Image 1 (tube, rainbow, N blue to C red):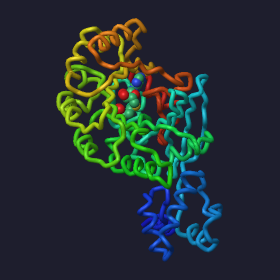
Image 2 (cartoon, rainbow, N blue to C red; image 1 turned 90 degrees about the vertical axis):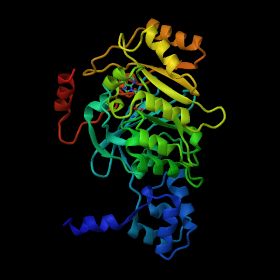
Image 3 (tube, protein in one colour; image 1 turned 45 degrees about the vertical axis):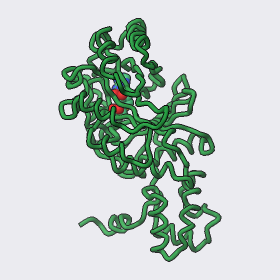
Length: 367
Ligand code: SAH
């Protein structure tokens, strides 16, 4: 039996976890008019307020009622690190003491928040530091949307347009319900009012979830972490390929509903002398035939414990040129925030079970 205090907090509605319709129902249950839900959403998302007492357009007794029966769980900024290039990494503490990282990447030219969907990740991609952590737990919808709230508030960007990319820690399609709920919360016109076009979901391609995503009314941009051009090579680099193979994944991409002018982004991490040869490039051209896509090359961000090297610019350019010559739109992702370990695949937080030193030692051993 949990202590009574825990049981009590569990029965309190967490506004951060609620879609507008759920908050309206909660107000109904309190015997209050539903329209207050919109006001609360505006306070929480447009103004970054997490204390009911400050919601000055609500009657005092309603504020008191809300404070007694609801919470607004919000990740706490434990550390902020700013890179030379303006990229800022936030270490956030969740209600249960676990940690995640979120990153602000300015002027890409958009302003972009890179958001986590899990504590750690279960996918174990061979070149990704987060994968080395393993999975601790899923984030809740409130924790996913909460990162956006916290970053917008901390950066003074509550009134600024920004994009979000689900490219932080975790595999979004391995935490489907919470991820999609978070996107719906972020899309609500009484909150951030973000359109799907400003959101990008990056995935290794968990196929059943990808098929489900294809049917969603709220559709983010899709980015697929491809990284290899043969089944054997992808089996090694992106282990989930052993379950959902390259061919099936690309077939699902072919079927994926795209609006006019929309394209799927294929992310391709470049590992020196592993998948960066002209043959790889030509195979990639053939694989993408008939798919409305573009390719984003990610030269490896190297790290201790990652047994691959970053190819030279010449090799990256040669690869890019082959794709371009075959009519494929290709871009090379500039690594941002590498000096503060905020770049792709570099997000890692210490597990609660191990001291930072021990965690680093584990990483070195696996190299
Ligand atoms: N789980 C999601 C989001 C991961 S992060 C996914 O796999 O798509 C976003 C991108 O960074 C992915 O394409 C991922 O494979 C890539 N990445 C991971 N580690 C990297 C590294 N060390 N260098 C460059 N890109 C990396």
